[in-house]
Image (cartoon, rainbow, N blue to C red; front, side, top):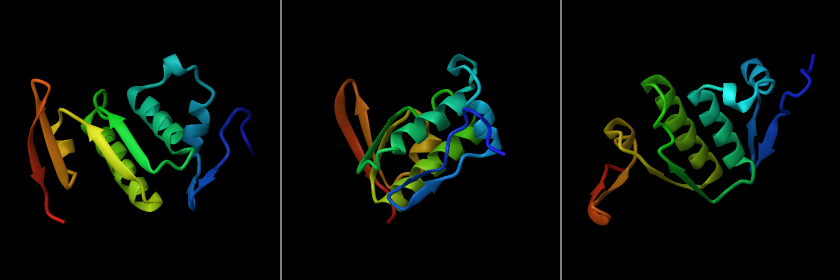
Length: 119
């Protein structure tokens, strides 16, 4: 039975995002009542709605615990691969940075260093 106000499945570029019962319940909440993880997932859904060729994420895990941070980074990486989009994030978290092949460091406003991971 559909829940009034719950989102419908989103299909774009061959990727279908099926809302879960948890997501449907979140749709009934005021945005100010959502947790950091819920807000991050909602932001990710909005970002993917128009099938972007580039995904930019500024500290996507900054307000999350490690478990939810891992879920968001995995979702970003998997989705970017699936839709063929480039993904660039900013982070202060070395655990998050280690998940990416290429890393750049900015110190005092200057591009300081680049590390290329294994391919």
